[in-house]
Amino acid sequence: MKTLAFTNADNTVNIEYLTDIIGSNDFFTIYQITGLTDAVQQKYVFPDLDFEWTLVEAAALADSANLTLKIYETDENVVTNHSLTALAITESSLDSGTIDTAYTEQINVTGGNSPYTYEAVDMPTGVTINATTGAISGLPLDSAATYTVDFTVTDDFGVEVEKTINIIMAASAKTDILTYSIPEQTKAADISTGGHTVITDVAVGTSLAALVATFTLDFGATAAIAATPQVSGVTANNFASPLTFVVTAQGGGTQNWTLSATILAISDTSPLAAAVNDSVYTDQINVVGGSTPYVYAATNLPTGLSISSSTGAITGTPLDTADTYVVDVQVTDALSVVINKNLSIVLTASEKTDFLTFSFPEQSGAATIDTGAHTIDIETLNGTNVTALVATFTMDYGAAADISDVAQVSGVTANDFTGAQTYTVTAEIGSTEQDWVITVTVAAP
Image (spheres, rainbow, N blue to C red):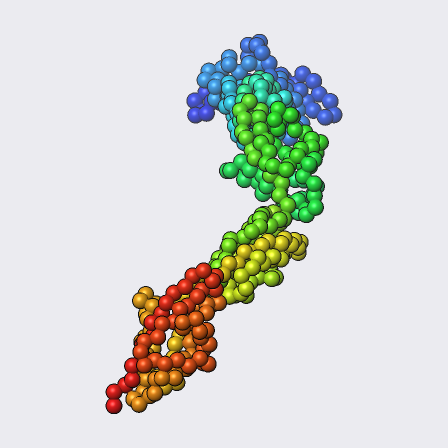
């Protein structure tokens, strides 16, 4: 015969009951505890002892909340200890969650005999319970609703307890575009969740009139353009200009997104910034679409101008014939796509009328050129005959000079500088003139 003893946590109660064998077979022996009141029964199975027995409600014993069952052999050596505290799920409610937002909770139990096994039925899709820890976690992707979940906990000896607890899931308020693509695109779409924009670059030559986008949105969200529902991979739209894509969250809130489809192109139109001969020039070639970095090139620029291959900036000082220049601008993107565009630059004649340099072979020192007073003072060596001096000079681009309508040629024309000479400088443009007074002095002995 075996002896069953009930003992509370601090061992202050120790009531022993003898058991009677009430049945047996080749696999187990059934014992019946005697001496307890007839109440609700709980069944415990001990595979390690190869027997099954039935225990009536332990509350009949003193301090029953912490009772422990001890099974003794006849020599009173303890074979095993088992808690008799009733197995129970302690939670009466669980935290609410939101669809498409990570959810965590915990099922806790008291009593019974560990380890426990946890199960749950009718959880929101995406949410699961850990069978060994009771931790509830996951990303709920389901309808916004109150979920009536049936929880079952089984202890180490097969005792089960069930409890139904509601989990309330609120609708998602998310309105993001997660993925977006167009079959004709040349690279991944640029999705800005901060700016709520999507820019997709499509191949050169693509018609923008009826592009079909494939996209995914936050769970439960829908989209429309001008009240037309948008179906991923189905609905065609005209992307000739940016579109307003209205995303409605599962919970009803909305967010406007701007969709654009771009093609590698030079966005500048003719003419580019006007240029003036002999004046610093700067302009910029602008590109949309394609894949950066770009490489720029240009032919037929006015002499003195060049384009930066890396930035597209056109800079320099033009020194060329006043005319309209048709410039062939070429851009190559990172995918080796090449585009060309002819853009004109109107180059007008210079209005400048300055002397830049002035000298005589006989001079004793450099000339003093005053561009504000339009005078040149120059000294020659002592004893110089100044009646037929030949000046060498340079002027602003395209300008010409004369003295009393006699054209002056640098290094050729001789003049009498006994007194001051007045040069009339005519700008390249022809309509602008400026008189300059040149004074020559002879150095003293």
